[in-house]
Length: 265
Image (cartoon, rainbow, N blue to C red):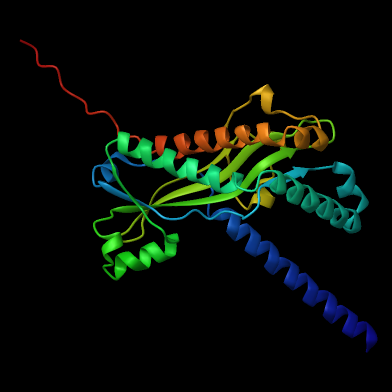
């Protein structure tokens, strides 16, 4: 009887584990490959809405150590506690940095899109609230042809091991959806600045990453102590990364140049 109960519980745990794995796999599948903006769809776009970004309320400060993965769960908990302590210390040194960086990124996206010929509507609401506003004919969402949904998955300083420097970076997903039918018009995931070897697709719940190499030795710090000694100066590295991210997102929506046929005399 006892052995049957054990087998039953073991089977139940296996099922739960498979369900968790399927859920994570489904999350990864939502971004399986880049989707460039099709020229035929592009011609229909005149007004683009920019809702609020999805972003953590804290700048990420992390240094991974492969030894913790070998030791086990308890060591990973310790690593998480240390990581949280570093985030708090860095944020205390730069309390307004996250908001300044996100504002810089939004301004950069709006500026570049307007230069590309789009009219941009700045929306003080989430992506889903903006879709709802469009459906209810809210004046704030009037005439918007598409919405950019920006999900910032990681933003801060990171090091892949004790032998690598902390470097600034951002990982974000940017999806452009038509408002009329919610059709996905374009999609990409960007790594701006981080060492590509230090990123896990599994942990980020994505299927791919487009890497954008950004490196300035002024913003590489050999350890956390060095990063904190230059906490104010290091903020410039994150602001620069935010600017590059804005250029990357808006640049993917660049309008294709018109082609003219040369007539022979």
